[in-house]
View 1 (cartoon, helix red, strand yellow):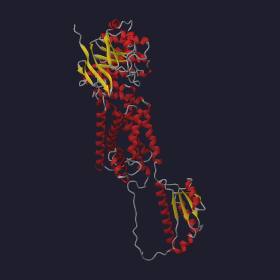
View 2: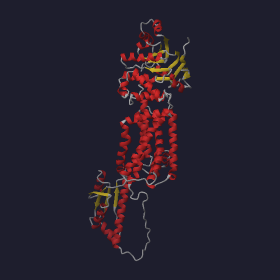
View 3: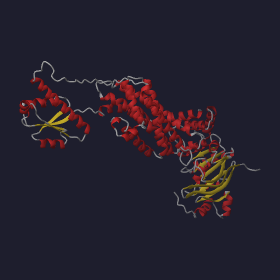
Length: 248
Length: 372
């Protein structure tokens, strides 16, 4: 069975003046895959992700997301992706319900279907009692789970997660990853950046970026075999040690 | 359209959940309208007067009682010499010195002429000018009074005189407040238009939610309209409140049409919101946006004819007022409220503000980037 390719990048590059943030990266991501995007701070992960989401115009190279070109068809891309940025992206001064309704509305969901989705989601997250509370009153872990659920509410083909579990406790992280697995099972492709190497083990395939370049790309088990490492942590350290860019 | 409604619902919820918005839209304008018109007053009163009387005659006494009874001057000291009177000006105890020379009465009676010296502290030019002019006119009046007592009027008027009578139109009591209140109302709308929407958008940049919007299928026009409409409505609420305060507190009832004031107000707010929007597309933080907004507001107000008449500005400044929506609205609101001007009288201003509004908003929409 030939897998459908949902993200295709070829020599994708982003320059800011003399600085090359992302240097000719090429990779494919298949439908339903959990694709880990690893790298030290400043390696260029967020910039690469922003180009794929249509937030940043590439300097050169080619890329297609959900079959749409990142230069010309960004509005089509936007209808087909979900995005969760590093910064918390829900409105703290709106309630849980109002946030869900807002994001459902801007993706063109009708009131009735939004309501049904919302109720299912609140049950799944065990947050039915919180629906009328302001988001700012929720604990961070809950906020992150809610933000993820909102990002996939409109059933995008791909969801981009930029360090979604930063600052979250291990138990909640585990729960968060269960949500990611659920999404992948439903056929949503997950593109995730992370700093946690245990999370890298959960991914189907992992790419490791160093100084704007993809140094390695394979399944976690193959990577460990090739680098003769016991854990992803060691793989990462071997690759990232050579980095010249100082972390930010 | 449906998406716009979703956005508007969210914006209104956030606006009404933010207590500082009530303060800015409801309380601040009322306080400003109650305080400013009394303070921003050009009538010169209570000029501190110091008198140096070398004559000590009955005429000099009469003159002093006339000038201190005029209501414009407050006699603060008698000084024995001009030098000492100068010291009281230096220390701030006096603004104006009148020196009556020795032999004032004698000269007046014998020679039919006498002199007198007025010295004015001209640090505050307006006060000096008006104070000096008042003093001179009181002296003239005093002079005419004595003459009338002395000279028997001839049977025929030997010298025909032109008598000038002036009548004050539109503001017959020359009440400064009636002139200022409508203009202050304009400054309130200026603040709301140019700061609030700008801060709101920059706030979304700061907390990062704008990324989430940019990655969604919302168009930039929908996003911008979602930000403009709530503040446009709030601005009209402020305008209504301001007109109510000026009626209840100052008894100002527009002579012209209330509808015209609103139509102009709507276009004016559209323009100022465009200015704010433009600022927000350049600013990354609320601090930046606030400073730039303040700079623009100051420029608009100082070159807007609020405090100083545009007619007396130099040519280059007059040119700037041609692209200043605040100048147009201040002029027009005074015309409508005081004179009762109709649309035909203000149509040049109307279309100028409209054109500026289209310009600023188009620039802002063009400059707003969903991508970098």
